[in-house]
Image (cartoon, rainbow, N blue to C red; front, side, top):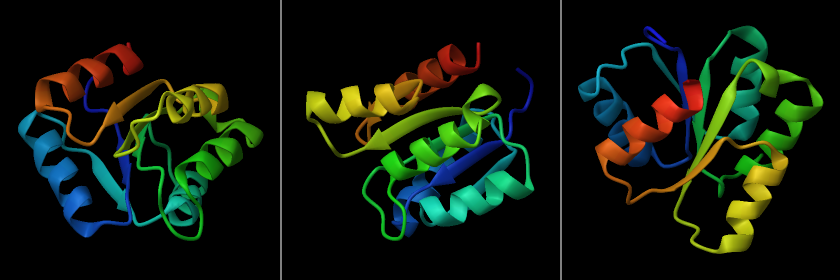
Length: 123
């Protein structure tokens, strides 16, 4: 997919910046940011995104709640979601997949692993 629109969702300013810089270096230029799931959901209502890369632990609306809302609104048919989190428990990974995430990555993932996950998710 040429130049997909990607929404990066994380309440940590540094993590969002790190994702943007990493994705820019990998050639992705069409990026947008949201500070939490509630802000992301509003952006998803207003604009089309091909991919959401979201943290789980955030205020107002966490990543699991965002996935549930996206599924309820039928957004997961056109927008894929990669969860990127510090949570290492297998049950969190299973919950994310059950709620509709296409991939589950740890924040410590390197850029090559991130690129492979994006390419696999977007086809």
